[in-house]
Every structure is written in C-alpha cells, then in structure tokens.
Image (cartoon, rainbow, N blue to C red; front, side, top):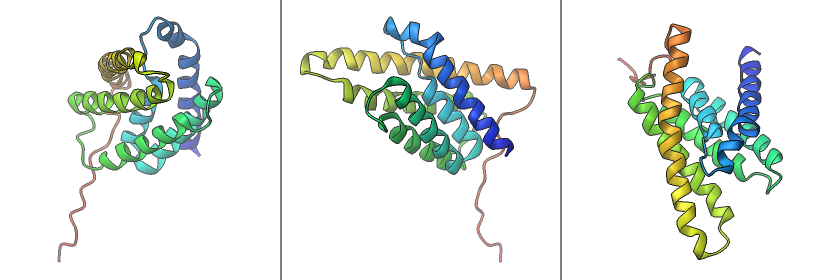
Length: 170
C-alpha cells in the first residue's frame, strides 16, 4: 500500500510539473522530459513490474492531458519502465554515469517516438531531430543532478544493491 501511495504521488507531481512549470519551457523549444525521468527512476528503484506499471499509468495520464491518441506515451513509457527495471538488477544504480546514460538513452527514445507522430512532412524532419537531441542533452544532466540532490537531502542511497543471481551453490 505504501508503494502504491508513493507511485500515485510521483505521477501527480510529474503531471503537475509537465502541465505547469515545464510547459513554458516546452513552448520555447526546450523540453525537459519529466515523464521519462519519473519512469526511469521508479524502474531503477523498484524493478520491472513497478517500472512498467509506473510508465503505463504515467503515460496514460499524459495522453489524457494532451488530448491526442490514447496510448501514445503509455506504450513507450511502459516498455521503457520494463527494460530499465530489468536492467536495474545488474546496473550500478547509484552511479551518476549510469543514471546519465540511462536517462539520455531513454529520453532520446521517448522523444523520438513522440516526434514520429508529429511529423507532417519531410521539411519538418530536421527540426524534430534537433528537438529530440536537445531534449536528451538537457534532460539527462538535469535528471542526474536532481537524483544527486535528492540523494544528498535524503542522506542515504536511493537505490539498493544490484541483485546477482548466483545460481545453485551445490
């Protein structure tokens, strides 16, 4: 029950940030991908089941908020949550480099997926590529910095140790 309440809180904060503070930056061409950030951090912390659940619910909420095709964000964020959660078993999750690479890659994939639906003609292709790259270049370092600040404020690591399946010892 505690995890479910935390998940609902994360989704509400992410949607509020996306709809209010970050929408002004997006209107000027600078996209901070808070949806990817929330999904990746949740998946790194809780694994593939909770990661895909967080991605799906967050994506569905974003689709309802944006009033476009239902499931556009939900699909990619659910798959991303599953993949990152699955990888989190073997990654050094408290490493800033790991967080940067995972956030950069996931932001790039999420923004490219969204841009594919917005392309109207070949003329807008270059603008979409620039916007996707800019979103990944800006979101990954800021997301890594935010995780570091949260860790510093909390006074303890956000993520546990990696789970290594050693197999049978006999």
